[in-house]
Amino acid sequence: MTAHDAIATFGTVDGQLAVGGIPLERLAQRVGSTPFFAYDRALLERRIALLRATLPPDIELSYAMKANPMPAVAQHIARLVDSIDVASALELRTALDTGMQPERISFAGPGKTIAEIRQAVASGVVIEVESSTEAGRVVATGEDLGLRPRLAVRVNPDFAIKGSGMRMGGGSQQFGVDAEAVPALLESLASTDIDFQGFHIFAGSQNLRAEIICEAQRRTVELMLGLAKASPWPVRYLNLGGGFGIPYFERDTPLDLEAVGANLASLLEDEIRPNLPEARTVIELGRYIVGESGIYVTRVVDRKESRGQVYLVVDGGMHHQLAASGNLGQAIRRNYPVAVGNRMEQTALTKVNVVGCLCTPLDLLGDQVPLPEADIGDLVVVFQAGAYGLTASPTAFLGHPMPPEILV
Image (cartoon, rainbow, N blue to C red; front, side):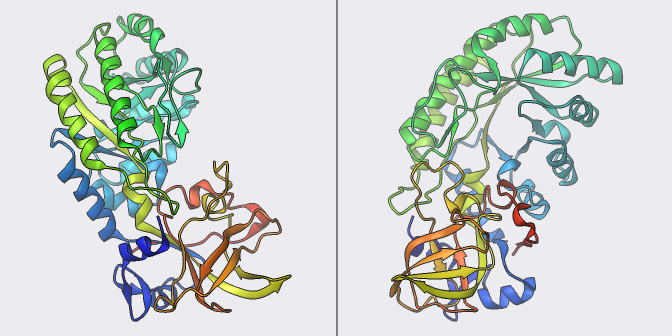
């Protein structure tokens, strides 16, 4: 994605980037300080509407809160999706606060503590167990509390999908129960008093190639149908994961969502409904819903030249937006889309380095990016900041204050 593409997503007012129709300088005054994150609720609504229009109507949408757990964002999205997936006790409380029904909240992730399991059982949410030990703890907690826990099994598939930004299935993994071990686990649970839901398989994240996502979905459904035959209970829940990517870099091509929707329609018609008519089929998305709706805004505090290169020193940095610095999974560093948000009508004239305020050369938000002639006081915007931004960054590093987050 280019900066031009990102700018077109938000629009401009009076020569400034606009979020929710508010020009950036005014928005900064409303927030009261820089740096800050801003999320556009209209863009969130537009993205979910696109998913509803393109995916089969029988597909349920689950919001993976780990992508952006800001309470206002979660509250807004909860009204637009069918369920929420959480990965910690804090996320669980945030999800319950939205008013989402507990049976529509799933709790996944390895290493759930006994205290977290107790909270989840008491809340009545679906606990996606990642090991036989975890399953035993869920059963024991249900007996102790006198409650029938809702339980699903997260499965580590016996296949791996290439092309994902992060592989989360296949081979040896900390995630889920190995597919070949699931029948024995189900057999061991057969005599327990649980409300068994079904299966969750998440093969990988941040994939922009529709053909790879479609292959993953086909193999996921095939595996789930096989495992369902070993289940002592009816299977009522199939979480196919997500992995839908968004374009971050200049050569990235947006995902062909229509191809993914057509593939899901075929799987529902030919495989899932004939074999598991009671099952609700879920696609779990985080980044794809929120990623393009957010920006990170930081103000230039110094402009300097060093041996022929221009540096814009800003009051933010990698402690708030680690991914944009290239230090969250990039093998070869590439720039996120960057703009000078209060100079949108000016032509990019100079290649500059946008650097943060931390005492490390890793604090680089833009490496030789072409920008208009920016100076002290201007507002630099980093796009694609709606997912895995603040909460995925080392906010305590060097003791700088936390940035505000707003939903506009």
